[in-house]
Image (cartoon, rainbow, N blue to C red; front, side, top):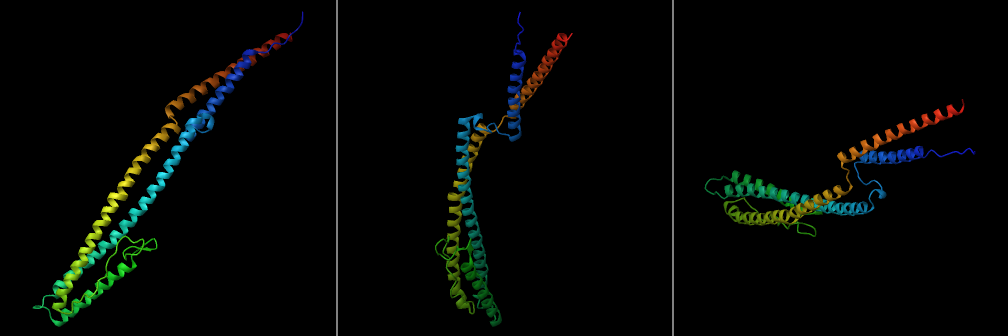
Length: 255
């Protein structure tokens, strides 16, 4: 009668099961750590491709939104400059009304009105010439500017008659600024802000879609992790039992 050596098939299957459970355990742990359901192409090839396509679209939307935000900031800056000019005209008009009161003003008062008006006019014209955004002029009507604001010319409050004539020029400049303010505000709101809002909604939807594909479900993944952990522990226990049984047989053979 020959002596044969038989493979312990049960122990082999236990080792295979342990390796499989450890692979599942490590995969679950990786998903829990990264927060991503897809960490490698093998996890979901089609899902990974779709996720990358969505990420590319989201990145493009982010840049478009940044561009619109830059334009909105430019319009807000220019609008602020126009508002400052409008305030200058309000003050200048008050001076002109005061200077036009020939029955009350002394020569000294008339001269004071004229000096104050000259200061405001210089500030007004300087603001137009020096208004820039990112190195480009914004109010002088040149290429890239958002408005063409006329400089104040021939404003004279040295006499009541000259002040009365200057009032018409100030009112014309005020009307010009009001039209520019309306155009700037309408463009900013109806074109740039409306478009940005639409793109932000699209980005939110694409982000949600990409998240649904690539992000891990922590509750479900934690359940899988726990199951794989228990199975691994059971496999280790079975291997230990198998080794004890083998040692028992060996000890019997040595008697």
